[in-house]
Image (cartoon, rainbow, N blue to C red; front, side, top):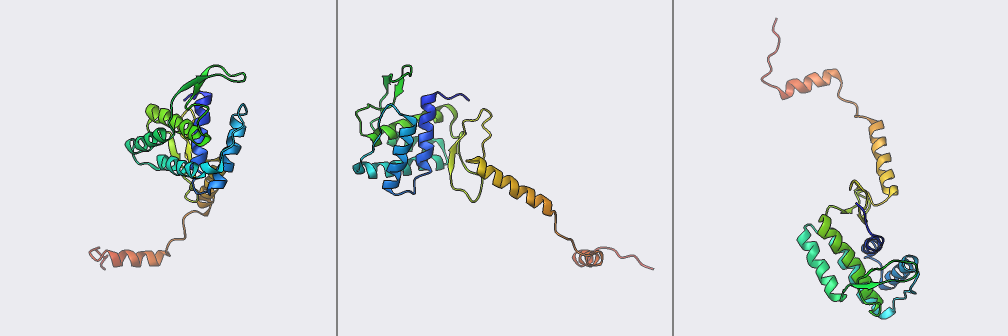
Length: 203
């Protein structure tokens, strides 16, 4: 599946914030500022401390989208984020980019612009593919979520690290093989004991 660069950025933002939902407000601000300095160098993104609560709420709501059991549940959460962030499409162009959409006015608070960008990207994905490209890591020791942007939609793990760890564990399990079975005599006694109707040979 092909993703436009700007929509891919929004999906990456949604995924990152959803995986940061347990961070404190100040930690979330640091995460979001660092992410946007990397992804949008044309604008000095600085989220103010008074946006801490809004950003924390956004992260929890985005996480809820990933954990939704139905498309309807996910859509309901996303519509709430879009309404709260006052999302609206704006055509813009900057630096060497071609004309493209931003999902909120550039004069909006940064937390609102982040919410609109992440939620709109997820909404577009859900409208196209439902929940099939939103997943949780298959490693039982990992709680991270992910968006599958692969061509074959076959992603099961959030990272190469988790995939490798699962492969190593499976290989070790195969190497151990089945445990030792009961001795032959014990096997016959168990068989006879559990099959009282079994006929015995007579002299």
